[in-house]
Length: 394
Length: 216
Image 1 (spheres, chains in turn green, red):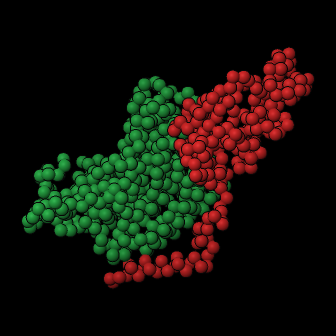
Image 2 (spheres, chains in turn purple, cyan; image 1 turned 180 degrees about the vertical axis):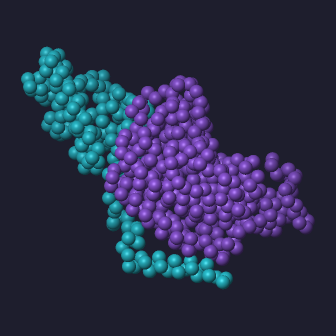
Image 3 (cartoon, helix red, strand yellow; image 1 turned 90 degrees about the vertical axis):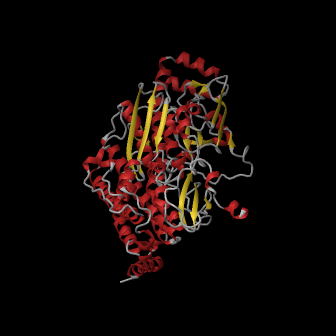
């Protein structure tokens, strides 16, 4: 008896959060097995821990533990100049640095009232949608990898991602740590040759989605593992503040590109795909469909991009001091609503700097999605949230 | 039919597998140490200090120290996000890239184990003195001293800059020659003042170069 107790969770002794009543009742004698998944687990996308209480194979409780990758981003940003935080935002969600740059630049532009030239807006849209495409492609790849298909879909996604990263490197000088956007524009202009290459890459992307869909969408094993698994109800998703593809997979029509129309998004003709069931399969399908919509936006933007300056003439890199005030800039990042909240006291560095990370907030409903499912499905549900630990822990 | 989706997927995999034998663009990787992909022109890995091998301050092309464009203004030190630059200002002055007498860095260190190649030092530098390099094979056994580069290790010639970033370097040269023309115009106006400034310079050559600028 004493031996079984040492390996099982007697609920009264558990740390805070474990003492509340279980959301679902264990069967049988109530003996639970506690498993710590992570922080070094192949499925955790970095260093994330899930303390799972199991009744046989069934998940009874799940406690997410994060903070292993905490880098003090917000506090550091309050001690350095506005511009110097820009390269640090690349390192939040390191799969899509461009959108992080964009959200931060948008917040500062709101604070100072700077105008972004037309061409820079187009460049932002082009790079942002390329980022969305490669994020969704690789996140599907990771999801399928977590299902056990090691390699093939992920490598197909990475092959495509590599083409997009090549474009980023050609333009910005780095594949991932781009440090591209500036307050009131973009850092470097795109050459006609770069735009031509982008058009060529974008022309090849639909073929990749067709291939991906052929490979995965009707696969019986994938459907059996994902349909009806990890259902997230629309009302819970809204109440928990879930955004992005996760929210839309639950059938809530909320896309900040449509709601805010920030930048020049209201000029483009695109649709917002919505899910029906809110399960893992829907989230997978939503990403696939959003990639198609991204291509539509890319084609329009590449067709219409005007010539002209890429920086606000009043913008300056040294001695940047916004007037006292506060601003919240948000964009539809590939993972959800990414927002930056800034308070300026008129000094060279922000008084308060706060990031609203979509990964962290989407992760808060993990337990609700996992309860009652097998432990093998936890990995899958976790993968379908699409997080990057750099952003969760900051 | 059950299994149809799996078969469709396998057909796609087979297409990809055999495709790599027929189409060259399917081969997306190179075997790194033997084969290399040339870095793009925009590539940026760690900053370096530019020195001019032919300039008013450094006419005989040999001395990297006299040709350094850096004037130790310490803006990059202040703006660097991870604070990896350390500069010590000189006590005396010497002519800079456009011919004005300026301070120079008595010490200029960059800790590349801290540097994140963000290029902000390059953006804020008003003297075109610090630029981004493209070298990346910098591993060393000594992780403290070996990764702390001093100004001698950081100094690279303008010709090297032209080699790695031709477009950017040409723009920079245009801007600098504009600045030099302005300084020379000023020197013509105040030839005596220029001669006095030239006399302060420790190197023997620059004073000889100054009067020619003043005569024109």
